[in-house]
Structures are given as structure tokens and as C-alpha cells.
Length: 606
Image (tube, rainbow, N blue to C red; front, side, top):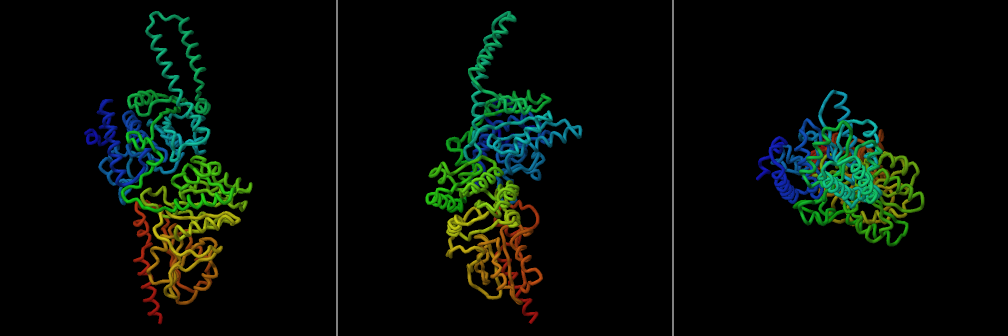
């Protein structure tokens, strides 16, 4: 097996081209085996295997810097760079992360996780090289889906103006997570056809080379013929060339020999260059090639049956059926956020704008100003990319945009870059913003129905999955409900299903904090008494979070003992939801200890 022979990029360089192709097949099989067990990004990684092998064959990592955009297609890179055996621990507690991570290996030039950043990072590395007198190469890998993000064009503008030596690999598989949309996707589709021109040109040149004593007149004929072919195939690369970046493509990204040949040439260039590679997402696995969207992210062996996103899709489709003003927006995440059903039922009212969260939020603001009822379904970790639009376009204008904040709280296997731990602090700090969280799937549906008539910015946050349902009283603005009756001197204030699950059974009175903002101040006043213990628990950061809001409200008037539990002021990289909660004291055992300590202190005071 070639897989066992490659322990580093140096070992890879010992293989010939035929052996590299066989090695690529073994890498694919290994990725499929591990991802089937552990979960992870499958289609994107299978499509990147061949050109990743070519990259490591040509360049010398870690001295040369390779930055994968998002990093969710870096599995082959991990396997090649000394992490083959550790790859079995992918996305498990204390195991390898699913993205590039600088703390994991010196071969990971940058820690990644979000889209459209690799060009800016790559230019930064190249400029640092030039400033410090270095000589290493910089390669930024970016997918065609990531080119829907505006940040990529800010970087292209700067790269072209700088003239700095670096290589951009455009991995064009016509997919991001959902199928790519928009003008950029259409443009790249036309560029793919340029391979027809390249094939015709090569055939023509080969024929001419065989003619002896080629004179100037025949050279002119050749040039006119090339011009004619170009006119017959009106394909241009003006987008990249006008940025000042030399374009090469499009080439077959699965032809290792051809990619190696092009990289060897580009390695000697002293200007920024873009190499356009056409790949098949899911290459090597029939099911993934046939349905790359379905196999983009695989849950692994312990897939849960029910998701909040399923409730979102069903309820939003229901609301749209009853109200023609209801519209849905996605940033290239239709399946992940549950909007596939809405898109099928109401294609003219469900908009996928590509990987462009800033645009999506401002688009919703514009639609709300025009009288529509927009719902933007987005992961918590991606919504933070649209913070300025939240402030300036939505909240400042007090527009009724409904943000469906998916994957809120700890996320487990996706790691530090995808934790949904920051939305409570940044959303709660915004004037005019209301923040709610359901305790179960039924309550999510009830909140969405209630939101139709709510006149102002609204965020509904929920985790990836739900298991049980609870009784759901009617939603009343700013009011909490009691989820479980218990002691009248100990209260646990629990926003969301996870916090309620760990709090129920503690013996305390457990409160379903449906509204994180505004606070139910009448309830807080009622329980603010000498001898009472109030515990706030939250699936988010303590700093600026729900518990801090309660503490600020009580201020100098606090009479009860208040203890706040939540995530500490550091990035959470734990690859297990349970492990992340335990690290931060969010367990039923810790609640029992806190209550027992309170009872002991109360007896001492007596």
C-alpha cells in the first residue's frame, strides 16, 4: 500500500506519476472510511485529493505556505503531512480538527473555518515574506463557491495592485454547500468551456509543428487561426486579468500530471497567478458525485433523528403558504438550515445569495423596508460576519427582520471556528433587537408563528438538534414560564433546550427563559429575596451574556444569592458538546453541588 509509505511530503516526492495516482485512490478510500465513522466533510475532500497531492509534490511544506479556504477540504493535506495515523481521531474529543489548525501542525499555515478568507491571508503571508527577506512560496486554495463572498474581491483587488508573487488555486466544482448561484457561477461556467479552445489550439499547433521550414507567412496564418478560434468560442478571463492577476486555465484538477506541470511553471513566475482547476465534488465515490450536496457533510455513525432545522423548514413553508409576504434567505446553506422544502414549494420567495452573509442581512433589511416579511436562516457562527449590517441596516432602522440563528451554543465536532457561543452577547447589546430561544421543537414553531406579527428586529436562537417536546403555553412578549416546579428558594433560569435538560430534576424551580432580551423583570423582582439562590445557566459566553444581564439588572438592589454559569472568556475547541459543557461547569452534577453548598451556608448562617 502506498498510503503506508507516505509519512510526509518528502515521502510523496519519491513516487512517480503512476504511483501518485494509485496513492490518490488509497487516500480517497481512507477518507471515506474515517468520515463514515466519525462524520465530517466528505464531497469537498474527495474532490480535492488529486490537486492536493500535486501541491505537495511541487512545493515544500511547511516552508512553503498552503492556505485552504474554509479548510474543510484539507483532509488529504492532513494525511500527507504526518497525520495519517491520527486521522482516525478526526472530529473526536482530543482528536484532529476538521479544518486547518496552526496548533495542530506546522504544515497548517493558518487556522481556518470560514469562507472567502484564504486570499487575504495568503497575501498577508506573501507580504510578510517580502518584508522579511524570505523566499517561500504562498498558495491560496479557494473554491468557486467562496468567490460569492465579497471579501474575496477585496483581496483580489489588493493582490493585483501589489503584484506580489503568489499562486491562487481556483478549485471549481460548481458547488459550495448548496449549488452555486449568481453571476460569478455563470461566469466560471463559461470559463470552463475555454478548455475546448485550449484543446483546439494544442491540436492546431501540433499539426503546424510538423510542417518543415515554417515561414513568417505561415506564422501569421497561425495567429489569425488562433484569433478565429477565440472568436468562435467567446470565452474570456477578463475578470481576473483586469484585477492584474495572470489567469491560467481551465485545467482538469484530477489530472495529477497536468496539475504538477502547471504548478512547476507557475512556481517560477514573479507575479500573482491564478490556476483554474475544474474538479468533481465527491470524486471517487459514486453516491457523492451524484449528490454532492447530500454528502457535503456526513453525520457519522450516531446521527440524530430530529433537528430544529426540520421544524424551521416545515413551519416556514406553512407560513409562506398563508402569507404571500413571507420570504426566506440563505447564504449557501439551504439544506443545512432546513430551507430546501421552502425552496421547492416557493422558489420565487426563497433566495440563496451565496456565501454572502453581509449582503443577506442588508437584503433582508431592504425587503422589510419594502413591506415583505423576511426570515434569514443562518448558523450562529456565520451571522457574526454580518455584525455591521445587524447594527446599521436592521437595528438602527428598527426593521422587522427575523433571524433564525441555527447551531447556537456549543457545536462539538466542528471545533473552535464554528462554536455558536457569541450570539447572545452581540445580539443582546444591540438596541431594538429582541432575542428569544425555544425549549423544544414545538416552541420553535410557536415562536415563528408569533414572529409574523412582531414589529421589530428578532433573533430566534436554537441548537442543532432537539430530542423531546414540552408543554408550550402561548408566547407572550418578554414573559418566562416555569418548566418544572421545585423548591421555592432555589431557581434555575435556563434559556433553551440544552439548559433546561441539564436543569430539570435538580429539585429547583426551573424557569424556561424564552426571552433572553428583554428580561422578564417582573419575575426577577419576585425571586430577588434574602435566602433565595438564583442560578443562571447559558449555552454561550458569560461575558456579555444572559447571566451578566441579570446581574446588571439587579445591581445594588440584589438581595438573593446569584451564581452564573456559562462559557469562560476563551475560545472553546472541544470536539464534544458534552465535553465543552462539562469544561464550563454546565452539568447537573455541578448544579447539585452548588445547591448543596447554598444549603450548607444557609444552615451556618442560621
